[in-house]
Length: 200
Ligand code: SF4
Image (cartoon, rainbow, N blue to C red; front, side, top):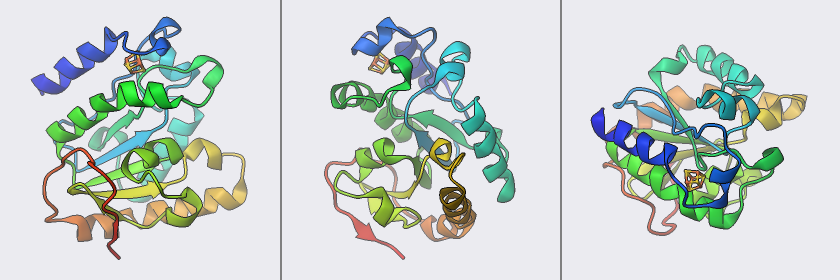
């Protein structure tokens, strides 16, 4: 879609926060313009920064395995991050960086109008559910600003923690069921503020 590519071009040229200084390539996101599911991670890592593509490292491989477990390929979903440029040394993104970058995500979601937004990790979750704790809400779909948000732990966090890995796998397996129930929810509007209704 032309408008999504327009946003991607703006992201590649963006200097709105300090992260532009250290990036090799910005990582706008990729996937079908009419994707039913959008996955939102935290920020690009080393490999993503090198290639300009989201989730291409180890966590990306795990994400692809998770997608395969529910019969999906990565080219059938849209994948992006809450922050589009790599923080130095893979540190956590800072609040002002998230504030500068998240309008791009809102614009992407407004165009794609997915049925389901799966947040991976606490930073993308906090954009939709600012007061939530991931340990309490992971795997529980919530209606926010006209979308269904499904918070999950970040696959990278689960890679070396067997217990968390099982949790991520279990939460992921529920996505088809959550998606089926999300059908019919109104189109996306940026989250004004938490009107968090537990759905199921
Ligand atoms: Fe712009 Fe986002 Fe990159 Fe900051 S992280 S420079 S706001 S695209």
